[in-house]
Image (cartoon, rainbow, N blue to C red):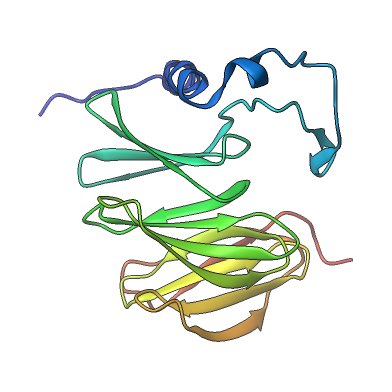
Length: 196
C-alpha cells in the first residue's frame, strides 16, 4: 500500500474556498473584515462571514473528519475531496469519530456547551448538555464518550449511544486533550496548566 500525504494547509485552503462559496451570501461577503458588531466567541468579533478555522482532525474508515471552529461545521474528506459539510450550531472544540466513520462526536465550546452526536450519513444531530466550555472529546471502545470541561477541571462520561450522562470526575487543572486506550480501561487526560 502506498502512503499518501495530504497537506493540512492545502486541505484547509481547499475547505475554506469551498465553504466560503457555500456560506457567504453577497450581503455577508460585503461586510468589511474590520467592522465588528459584537463579540461572538471570546474576543473574536462578529464579521458576519467566518473562516473555516480547522482545529480538530480525525481519520476513520478511509475518511478524514475536520471540524471548523469558527466555520461551525464538520467536513468529511475522502480521497482528498470534500464529500460533505455538516453545519453545526456553534463554535467547535473536540472531535472523535467511530471506527466505522458513521458517527462523529463534537464538543460545542460555549459557556453552555454541548456534546453533539452526528450521524455522518444523514447529518442528523443529537445533543447533550456538556457543561461549561467543553474542550476535548474521546470515544472509548467500551461504548462511552468522554468530554473535558477545560475551565471547570472535570471530565464528563456519557453513554455513546444515548448520550445519557453517567458521571463526572475531577481532572488536573485545565484538561485540554483526552485519549482512551484501545481496551477502554484507561482514559488519558492531558492538562494544559499545572496545579496552582
